[in-house]
Length: 151
Image (cartoon, rainbow, N blue to C red; front, top):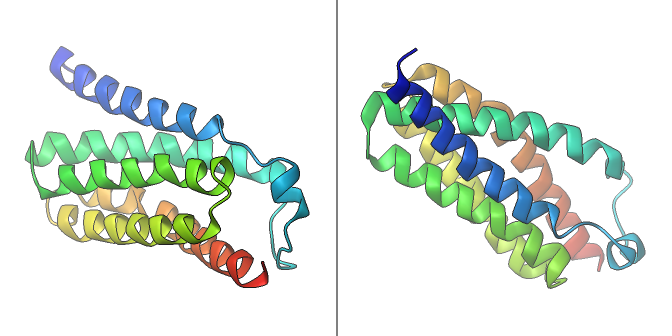
């Protein structure tokens, strides 16, 4: 692996870590515990390990997309999803705005789908690394919607 390749991976890892750190500042607390939630809500302990794995995959996918196409629509969509991902925890847990978080997660979902579609022909690996993320965000969006409806 070249120094340039390592630098690309490092940049995407740092961007992803920054988003993860920001998200970790807004954790479920008494407000979230008091909300009505559907029976299929996962336990709180599950979110940390799932997001850790997903963030690694997100960083690698971003680096692979950059290596295959440089600055491109795929890279822009990767950045959009990263911003939307970062904002969700702030909107939901920080501001207690279930409605704004639902709008944000919709944008996040669209950016993920756009990234997968845009990068598919250039880096199938990058696209496939986003599939578990898409599935998790689809589940999270359904949960966000359910919590919105119940509250």
